[in-house]
Length: 293
Image 1 (cartoon, rainbow, N blue to C red):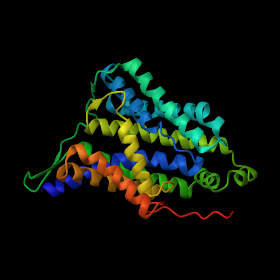
Image 2 (image 1 turned 120 degrees about the vertical axis):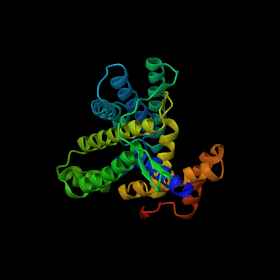
Image 3 (image 1 turned 45 degrees about the vertical axis):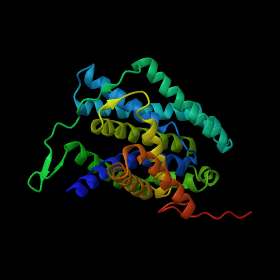
Image 4 (image 1 turned 180 degrees about the vertical axis):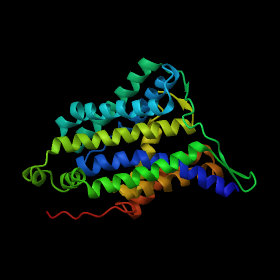
């Protein structure tokens, strides 16, 4: 039962990483930018939901919706102010800007909500599932997290492959210049991508804080980095790859905590990144792109 418990916990944690990684991979796949402030958007979404439920007394569903709206608007604003002027800038400039936005969001949260930890309220008021005569108990939050991850991954894949806007996103990913000549509004497409990624970050933040109910201004920092690792492991730019990478990384982290030690679990996660970059730099489902020079 210990093995099954670890697998279930790994699927739950991996589902959170996968949802965050989907935001990373969409932004990189279309805008070719690594938005390292993505982890702090998670924190903002969690704080918005916390304030809606704890201070305003709103129902959990309304709190989650407010978090999604707030993070979606935040993603669009950040893209317009911080990233759009750097659309054709070197990658290093974009990276430095992303780190700056990350620190700005963390310190803004520190000023608004202070540094004392907040206890996140339970958003899933459902009974746990008990299996094998009580030997295995799966919490409702775990089930909801896994289901949300699967639904989001399938929905995003369908959206990108089947809808008109999804085709515009794929066109921008292939060649922005050609997409512009075909009448596609590249700026609006990239803004929509940031909006979707930030909305997903809000969902991930709420689910993560429901499972681990401690909220501080740096809550999203480490999960954001690990989700980036998940995106790279799965193949950054690939939606199915982000899903697989998140699940794999979550299971690896839980087993590392169980059999190696909590203090070394993070080291194991980042060691996985190094191994993947050495063996298959494009990731599990990533494609190697050859450039003619």
